[in-house]
Image 1 (tube, rainbow, N blue to C red):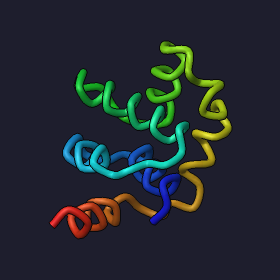
Image 2 (tube, rainbow, N blue to C red):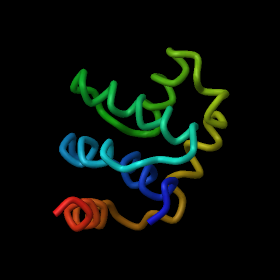
Image 3 (cartoon, rainbow, N blue to C red):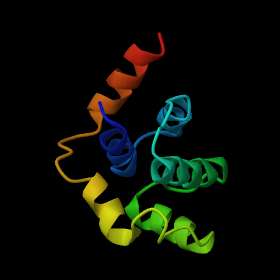
Image 4 (spheres, rainbow, N blue to C red):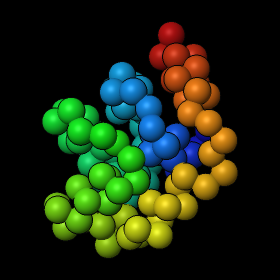
Length: 95
């Protein structure tokens, strides 16, 4: 699974535990690291992790343009059928 798809699954709504597992994943693209940091910040504050909240967090920390804006965040969730796959995927990676 590629980095963008992994982030897309998280944006589609996963548990806080899934986000914690994702943080162990080694992202190579800086914009993906920035998006993950925003997700982790939201999770640490017990806030929802979805496209809107991540967008708002990135805007708050002045990083939204650096990651490609709202259009890029929206593209991350395209072609994601359902989020149940992400939990299984992450469990397999970190066994």
